[in-house]
Length: 292
Ligand SMILES: O=C(O)CCC(=O)C(=O)O
Ligand SMILES: [Fe+2]
Image 1 (cartoon, protein in one colour):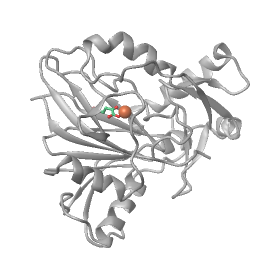
Image 2: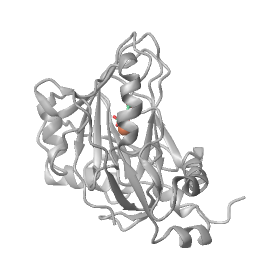
Image 3: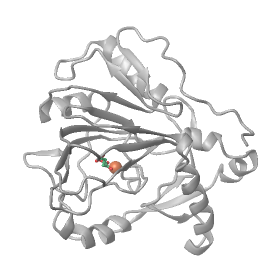
C-alpha cells in the first residue's frame, strides 16, 4: 500500500523546439526533432538539458553520427571522461566501445548500477550510441533514484540523510579479470590501484536540487563508520528497493538509437539475453562534480 504519492513524470511543458514523449511514469522520454550530427542551436540545447532534468534519461532515434560528432555532442555538457579500466575505441580515448561478440558469454553492465562512482567526481552522464543491435534482446533498463528516495519512509530518509558510503573499484578488478576471457570489451593492461572514496548516501542534484538515493551495487562497499557485515543488510534492502519495477523504464534499441542518462540520479542494467548475436555500442561519458 502506498503511503506517499510518487512524483511521477509529468506531461512535457515549456519546451521551445523539440518534441518530448514520456515513456513511463517513473522516468525516460523520447526526444525527436533533432539531428545530432549537426551543431545545435541554443534552443535545442536548452530543450535537451530540460528533458534530461525532467525525465533523467532521454532517447533519440535514427541518428547517424561519427565518433567525433558523438564527442562534440558530449562536450556540450562538460569535459569527457577517459575510462580508467576499459580499452577505448582505437584512436578515440574518450569513447568506450561496449561490445559483446557473438561468441562471448558476458556483457558489460548486467547488474543495476551507475557508472564509475568509485571516482571522487563520478560522471554526470553517459551517452550510449547503438552501432550494431541483435535481432532481439539487448534492451537496457533504467531506474530513477530520486523516486526511490522519495518512496522511502520519513524515518528511513531521516536516518540516511547525513550518512556517507564508501565506494571502491575493487569489483571491476576482481570480476572483470575473471570474466575477461568470456566477454569482449577488454581491460587495459596493468593492475588498477584500488582506492576508496566517500559519497553521501543521499545526494542532492546540483542542477535541480532533487534528492536521490546514491548507493551502487558494484561499487558501494559499506557505510562509513560501519563494517561490511553491519552495512550489508541495509545496503541489500536499499538496493532491492531501487529495483522496484515502479521506478524503472526499459529501452528497446535500434541501430542509430542514442540514450543519454543522468548518471547522478539513475541506475541502469544491460540485459544479456541475446547469445549468439553481436552487439556494439559507443559510449561517451561526461565528467561530473563531487556529490554533495
Ligand atoms: O550496453 C548497455 O546497454 C549499457 C552498458 C553499460 O552499463 C554502460 O555502457 O555503462
Ligand atoms: Fe554502465
